[in-house]
Image 1 (cartoon, rainbow, N blue to C red):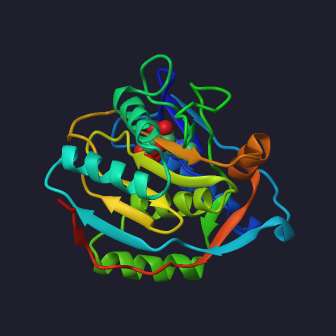
Image 2 (image 1 turned 30 degrees about the horizontal axis):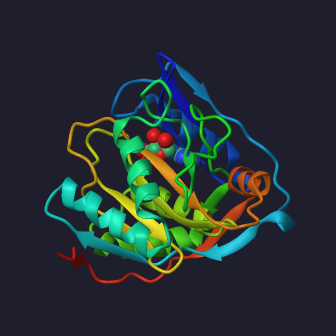
Length: 257
Ligand code: AMP
């Protein structure tokens, strides 16, 4: 589902479900688009594609940690350090972070999807820098969703944003050539974000922007001499991935000073 108002992206969501639940899920998506905290959509697009079960990749979710930070500037420093540890060159990490902070679309607004960034040179590789790459066709099994919600509830984090971001990052980390992801929301009331990387898992950072800021976005950092860009984009946008169990939950940490 994608919802917009006055041509600006408002909300979006991706599901991978059994045909028997299709009507219910389509109704939930419509309600969600109409009841968005930041206004009612004037355009809602719901598209449904049949996926063959034998093309579905079954994976566990990434491990999750929170690094506590005193403010968003420290949050951004923490994010840069995590990206560096994941193999992203500092100038590439810094320019992607600055692009999200300033509005990564050529119009200076938010992109609908994610930037693809060369982890060494910082070059932007997505074919359309207004749209970006939209990761789709991923979800949790009902059992995994139950288990995840129980764990997140213990941490006071059982919210759709957190669950959906974990699922999205899990698919991104499984993509060939991806070394890390940086994300924060465009929701002005939601300053948290994360860095995800194969070794570190999903590292939640409670502040990556000031409250009230409606800029947000995602960068997927890629590396590799023989990077197959069309294959990578096809994986991210089209390959069905279902998560059948949560990853580990590590205790919260304070940022390193
Ligand atoms: P959200 O976490 O939904 O607030 O999204 C934050 C930003 O991430 C958006 O402004 C988009 O740029 C990007 N984004 C949202 N959904 C997706 C997706 N499915 N695939 C890639 N990028 C996305």
